[in-house]
Image (cartoon, rainbow, N blue to C red):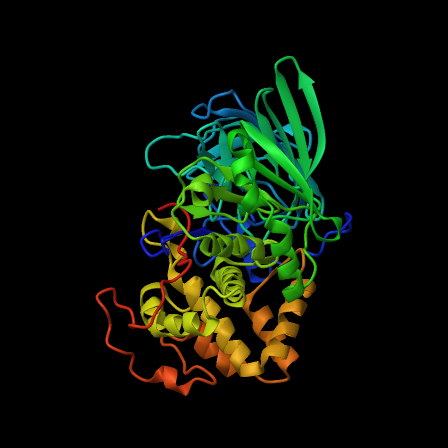
Amino acid sequence: MLLIDRSRAPRPSRPPGPKAPRTRGALLAVAATFSLVAASVPAPAVPLGVGDRLFPNLGNPGYDVTAYDLSFTYPGSNDKPLAAVTRIDALAVDRLERFNLDFAYGRVTSVVVNGAPARWAAVEEDLVVTPATTVPRGTHLRVTVHHTSDPAPGGDHDSGWVRSTDGLAMANQADAAHRVFPCNDHPSDKADFTFRVTAPSALTAVANGLPAGVTRDGGTTTWTYRTVHPMATELAQVSIGASTVVHRDGPHGLPLRDVVPTKDRDTLEPWLRRTPEQITWMEEKVGGYPFETYGLLVAEARTGFELETQTLSLFERDLLLGGRYPDWYIESIMVHELAHQWFGNSVTPRAWSDLWLNEGHATWYEAVHADENGHRPLETRMRDAYLRSDEWRASGGPPAMPKAAQPGQKISIFRPIVYEGSALVLYALRQKIGHRAFERLERLWVTTYRDRTATTENFTDLASAVSGRDLRDFFQGWLHGTTTPPMPGHPEWSDPPPPATSRGESPDAEPTAPTAHHHRP
């Protein structure tokens, strides 16, 4: 995801196959704490998590989700709750007398586990479920929850729904999917998704993946979509609105579809037709596009960010049509969200501390694209980032050990250090191992871990193997150090910086584009 720093932005003058193994590593070790001791009085229901350093209550131990089937019925107004049914297929990795789902901001009316009614209790942002009979370890678990999904819960609640002028879209990153539907809301547990969305027939509903049917009943229409590749909950997308779906072919016949406000169909075309060329450019850098389709979802909503929801990236209408930014800047943002389809969506972080792997890579390819198209020299941008890196580390932590979110601002983990500061790490790595080794590493990374989760250690180990060097000391400094190491090949960058201007920049620094933070301002 990319949050646009509007104060610094330049102004204008494959078929389905077997799923890859889910390796959740140390996170699932927490599952041992989930075993409940049999007693005459049941233990109190408590919220659980998988032990993520930054979001300790996200995710749940004891099971591994394989598939979600989500049904939403839109009432025709985006300020009213949607009727919803969430069906979850999972594998019990522990013996389950009780288990938790992440869920908040909706009213639950029933829970069924393996065909039998279950008891449930809401505790903080968890739904604690007690099945009628214990679920043995290693067996299938099917959970059906009837509930509502509230796009406007009130107060300072932050729903995963985004209300547009004509409907709804989703923006679940980082921790908001469970505010839309019950789930195991942690990127370590990817799953297949099916979406069934019923809405008034005058509207159009679209979701991640490919169409799997349309049925009409009186004045309503139900659209069904299915993903071909597993997906993290934070990347789920459902759009409902007065929209037109624009189809075209991408590289190698890849089906592209954009979802745009019908009234803006023609005006948006100059931006939409750039996607095939951008995909070709990314494929030349890292290899074939990893999913079944791609496109832009343009919403007339004020979000302050763009989001890489899988196969259908969310964009603000005003970014593209507001006339506030030069074309190259907007295209950089388009490339950033596209790059996330490889880095973050296909290869997903196993823990939120691995976020730098997502945002650093997306920022890197955004910057390389701007450099190759003559808009901003890469070296200039990286030098500017180098001069700021110590400040970013002090305020946000090192790239691979970001500081926790500020109280009441969970998305504040998305600081400059995970964007420009992490792209700087990749630049330093390329300087250290050379262009050819770096390019081999990038391609091998996205193929080795395609449709899987991965960690910082996975990346650093692969970099050492590809380069034939022991890079442990290099990565220790660049990813975990509190100060920025010397830049390979640029000893002069460690000299004292030039006198700062009133904006705290070096005199020759160009405007940062796009400076990325994250999510809702």
